[in-house]
Image (cartoon, rainbow, N blue to C red; front, side, top):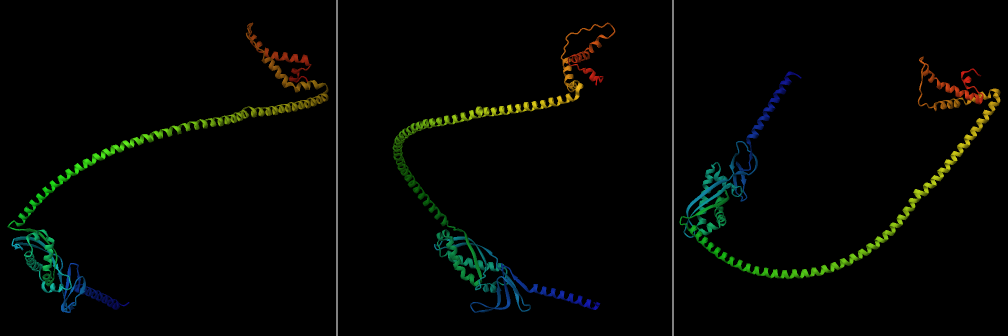
Amino acid sequence: MKAEDIIIALVLGVLSALALRFIFSVYQRYLYICEPSQILVVSGKKTKMKSGEIVNFAVINGGRHFRIPFVQIVKRMDLRLIPIELKLGRILSAGGIPLDLHAIANVKLSTDERFVHNAVERFLDLPVDNVKTAARQLLEGALRGVVSQLTPEQVNEDRIEFANKLVDMCESDFNKMGLHLDTLKVLRVEDEAQYLVNLGRTQIANAIRDAENAESLCAQQIAQEEATARQTAEVAQKQAEIGIAQKRNQLRTQKGQLEGDAQAVERESLVAGEQARAEAEIELQTVRKDGETRRLLCDVVLPAQAEGVAQQLLAEGEAATLRENGMANAAVIHEMTAALAVAGDKARELFVLSQLDLLVAEVADKVRKMQLQNVQVIDNGDGRALPALAASYPASVVAVLGTLKDLTGVDVSSILSGSAR
């Protein structure tokens, strides 16, 4: 892009921004927004009213309006309340009694399309004090006119009706001025002649008298009602006592009947209980008999049967053992006889050798069973007595083996020493 194109684009952008800013400022300057507490009066714009009359301005209540420059003028009018305090003295009432009134009113510009143009024509560009002064003058005149038609009692007692008549009287004048009376309250009504005060005193005296009469009448009525109530209470008490006595008699009768019924039921229940107890005892004895039978069966019969079976099995086992041992011994003897027959002259020695462990064990047992209580050893001084005593035990074994040789002809000592083959 060339430098000239860039400069042109920048210039166009600046001009566009300036144009937008100018348009925005113009729009902001000539755009009017109507707030809820205001109305806009647009001069230079013709408006046709409902009555057919054409005026050279327009009233906008809410919304917004864009003013055409050099052609229209837009101004604002305030719709907020204007408080007005009214203090009027010596106003002649219908009875010719002068009254002093103190009231408060709230006035504002009317927003009714029928009367708002009257307010624009009369109060546009004027301060609020002018509106306040005009409204006060209208209210004072209407107030004097209404008071002149009412008595002091009516003004003081029915202030709401008084305020309504005042509003009705000044409504047409307010509409012509384009104003609206929002509220009107009468705060105080007084008179210099103390007419209302004296009237109040008379009413107070009458009220006190009526109250005293009413109090006396009420006291009499209360005394009469108390006497009547006392008499009624006594009669009711007597009737209640009679009723209580009757109820007690009925209670005794019912109690006697219930006790008789209860005793009958009790006797029946005792008989039924004895019968049920007897039946239960019979069932219990039956159950005990069955239980004893089963206990004997479990404790005596079944164990005896089991013992018999066990003894039989043990006897059979012992018999089988003896039978097997006998057969085994016979087989051994048979085999030994065959071996001895084969051995010839050495058969005796072979038999002794086969029984050598038993013989040696028997000999050792014989020697072991020898018991010596008190042994007195006399040594000659050479120390041989004690060893000789210790050597007596092997000598005993040799003696036993010698005895065995004499009995069997088998020299075990020689066999053990290896001298004999």
